[in-house]
Image (cartoon, rainbow, N blue to C red):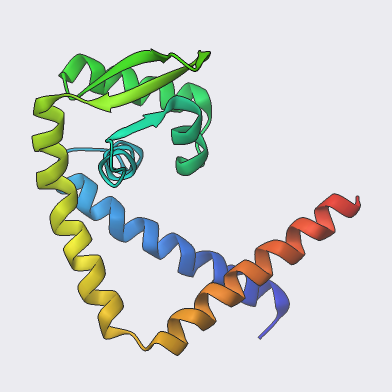
Length: 146
């Protein structure tokens, strides 16, 4: 196997996970980013996230995040307020209907994820995490050298 084929297989493996989550999102008539927004907010104890943090968690540009926020604001699932500690930041929270929607969307997904991770050997999970992080760290290091 060539190095290019190895790289392609690593990326395909990561994309396959996103594709699985996209299948889940589609069942709820959401895009992957919309579903992940609910996922990220719902797993927070206070059900709040800053717009900046959401953008970083989703790995999405601010403009894309702004669009999905506007859509969910219009749907009545979230609301946004200025962060009292930093007036330049906005905090996104779930409304009551957003909380119900997110619970129906995310809790079953959390359950499936936990069932699946329980089916995997701890050693295999650590190997996957270690190798992906190592690949990313070395690649970043090479890029920073330029």
